[in-house]
Length: 413
Image 1: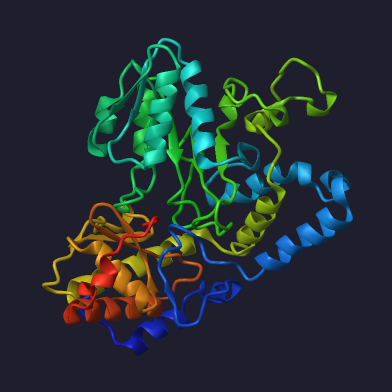
Image 2 (image 1 turned 90 degrees about the vertical axis):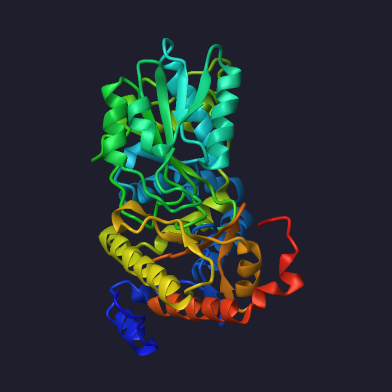
């Protein structure tokens, strides 16, 4: 974009946007420009009624019969099948269960146990903390295992005969950088290692082709771009070729081949059900189901194209409207190398973020100095981005962020 457009120009872009009708699927507060869907997706309009029906009708009226009558028992596989096309997987390769952290533990441990002659869990420094912490926990639990970190640019060359599993986040939570899934997967396989992709910051926002990239394992959360609500159940993917070979370390009764036989000895279920553990959280599943409805009739190619357009507008706006404000754009300029949020570094990123929130532009902050602005293609408009840039320019020009009230740190940043 060569010049910062006028408001009417971006409104014209929105009118031609094939995803613009999707915005009406969300209950977006008036007067708010929400650029934090990469952290918590907005509320779908259908969610309150869906959850209320699960509470009052299914739980309240049909009680325990709902496990069969309303298919509660099948919810993990049913929702997994709905997520599968969003991440380039087959329906029988994805299941919804537990949290991202729990699923990381299951799959990292399973991969390590399947490679007894290999000791290394390879990842990058600065990966999302839970990925690092879980990897460290697995290494501490299993004999002779270690976590090795090398910069993402050096990962391919660092995979060797001692690598059991490579654990990487597809879109980096802080910088927005998107890794080469196909290339790094091929590098892992060339060395005889497995690879696990964390899709938490990419599922539902960019195109993903797990099967096309020959990926082994993946996890992701349900509450960011999938709009499942705070603490929504997560999902995990295991390529069909590995499902019979990997064994979950969390051998709960829902992962048993015949859970209602109530036998004393564990025997894993076939397929993805072996990666279940405890009773599925049905009310959370109902909210996630409504979140996935927002993707009905949506092509991920259109989602990815709009993500690129929104991020290009945002980067151009920061560069042109905030000249001299002290920002450094840390998100890659190459559209193919970034996800669906734009991050900028500034010495006073926290204060700037709070000043924006006070003015109805909601982004978020990541320590020590990053302001993140998320772009959710289903409901973020080009006008939203334009208005956010104008407000950011005003905050910087007037130095409104210097108000001492904006320096107070909250428990959640």
